[in-house]
Image (cartoon, rainbow, N blue to C red; front, side, top):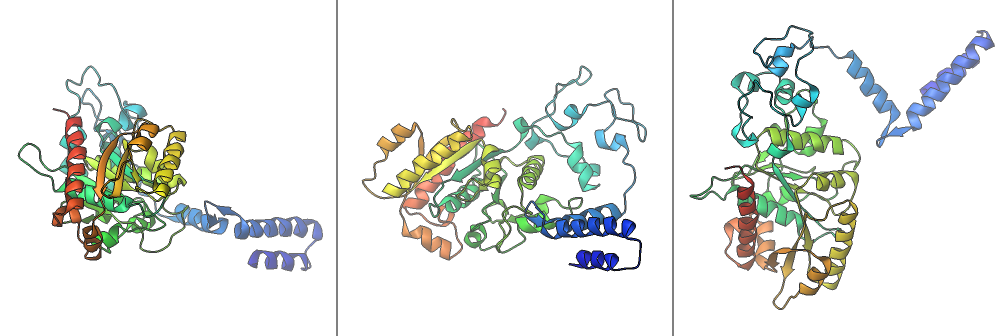
Length: 383
């Protein structure tokens, strides 16, 4: 409105029309574009303000290459402004060790950045360490196109049970839970932890934020990045790019397992999360509608190219439930059968975990599922 009014004032002024008219037209078109054009769900005016703030912010100066890459292979330091001898692929992806490097780096869970890196710039600490999916966390998720199947319950219970699963043979794994259900997040309600959320992390300045600072610690030892406590735009600021940043940081923090709680729809964020997972557990409710949803969910995920990762968990099963025929038809593997137990609802209302605090049939089945996933996790660890 301001731009159009200024353009009208220029046209009505005493200035020569051949000069004023083109300027007024450009000004009016730019004003309309800033007001009406939307990019990623936000007005173009917002992006213009963000761009102005970005270019006006103070710069931190030149970063010395020897800090970023730790020197060359022969021990010589790089000079300021000189390109590093290591390639971009060597820095940020999988690489073949050079002949001068006697040993390959240890797995991510055994590596810790030196104190100088941890105390330094958070951006540099993220750049210094090479990221390799082979050395990163194992990622799993529970999915169903139907709401109310118990995805969040299973994700929360599995995360905390595995985090508390220390025994004589294995130490407890380092487990994280990320609530990506922007439509109806419920992990915070189950844990009784209304702390900082994924939305707070997304809105924090990118150069200063660290995902571990926005995660809450549960008594089981699990670290949780909670979902937003209010309705948010599904397209911004929690985007697929932000999710990839979170997963990279969790890999660099040395987590062994990351559980992603997603919403029951294949939007861009959920699709990115599912495609980043090693295992996708389809949750089946043993009703006619639940079985139909299992077929729909399987077909939708196979269109994404996911086949071998798909496994099935029956939730709220009752005595006499037999899903052998649909499981054989789907060609899937049934790895969990959680009975219908009133203790699950009671535990949720009291902000407790049935697998940790109860001894009923659902708690026993959840602990059995956690042992199975935990045994697969331990077998994937290097000797």
